[in-house]
Length: 496
Image (tube, rainbow, N blue to C red; front, side):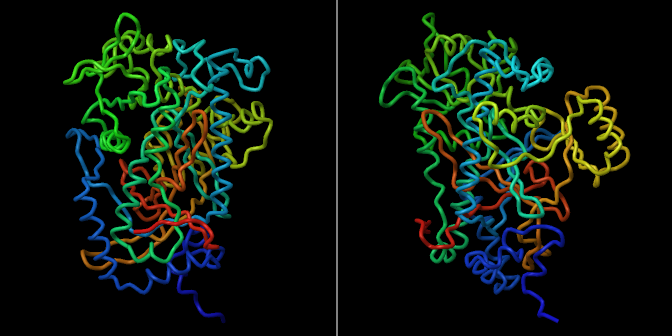
């Protein structure tokens, strides 16, 4: 009988593990990291965990959770075991993400233009007719380079056979990139010796790449346009990220009250030195709150006349209003056809198979298999409204079934994938820790303007509760540093 692998306790049977699966044990980087961690005592692991927590407190890395008691700032939940992906695999993922976002931008541009994809019968009109994120105010607009979604965060998951899938696309106001950057900073403080011996691709060029993407959109033609980050304010759950990115890019963080649109449709910012014209706005406010003249008249977060200025070409908005028409889980099911239609290419990264509840036959299947599938509302985020059938109660399944019957267009279903795992530090007491497998996903970020850029890795989110598939920090999940590693040693790596 062969000896038991020292990694066996880190593997959940029937699941692919990014560090411990037999398919990964031939990778010298994965093996070296595992061996390093397994040689540490529980007390040593707890000490490293505590060091990471101190770094997070010192750096002020927080996120906001909303409850009946109000908004609560919490320390960012971070796991000290990195998630590893080989550079060779990442290069293919990177190309697949660029391909997907190109196709989605073609789609958005067409939807607000000629709508040729509808006329050719490739995309059904009923999906658009009931889209809550289609903005008639954007029809006829032609943003620079034909790009609407300048910043995209696509969520990736790995199946039990190691295949990477796109789970969903976030094209409205995607968040999380600041935590990707801060995770790396914390990890360098926690395990500096690992960075000395491994070839880890850097992530710290993102703020520069974001600035260059935004600057490329400027209508002023200035070599150094005036760029601002527009935030809803300190009570927004992503405010840490808004302020962090503004600081890293060296631009102003503003709220709606700091800006105004003049009679010539130019946007200005009030400063202590007088007014300054604004060329580009990286807006972190949802469409409906962006401009009370065009959308919700009761919004105090936006800027009156901002849509007028954008339509007149006097200011650039990223992401462009209306981008959310493609940020819809019903549209997601059609992305492979969208990609073939606009690019005449096969998808490099596949979709997760998806049932459309708007289709009566598919809806009947979903309703009769609610105990087997994952059911999602079309336009919720953060894991809200999600039903994981095998883990749900009978009452929860009945409630979801009633919601599906009431509005089938608003629901899709997918098979319950055996999401991949990676070893994660589990605390049994203040000084006693062990490594156990936990489920993960990954959100890389794609920037698009005159060129495209993909982060080398992304935000790995981890379900900290045993058996849970919910990775969102607002619902008990955490995060990990994502290492894209060159096992051949040929690429330029990180340094502590």
